[in-house]
Length: 173
Image (tube, rainbow, N blue to C red; front, side, top):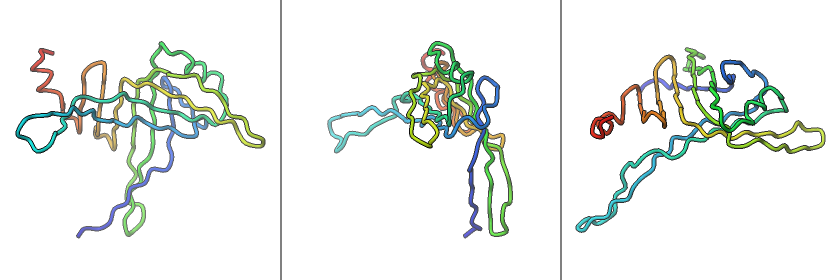
């Protein structure tokens, strides 16, 4: 049995169209890549297996800690894609303490799907949240591609390997 290695990511910075919005976002939820399945029914099978049939819509959210006019204006336009990045530091720990720090970068291309309302509470900051429809999502850890999904270009890569290479060759593109 090997030594225990613990990874932690506890903070991040967000960039919109290349500009840091440090201190404006309270929370960012990146898309969940959810695989669609298609059920296959056939005589002679004792069950109905389900096979990969695509990727569900990609959605991200940003919870703001207040109103920021310049940033909110960008998120009010549902027709223009935004280029977003979330950048974090992954810390590795072992029995001797912190052993490494590695960059984590999330890349998103997205359009706003709402202009957020706000919740006002006495003595509390406002709750403001934007929801985004994503067409592109990529996660890179320590310079290594983990996943890349580009809905508009039919790209689905895991660890840099094109999961759709055979499919794209078969359909001629």
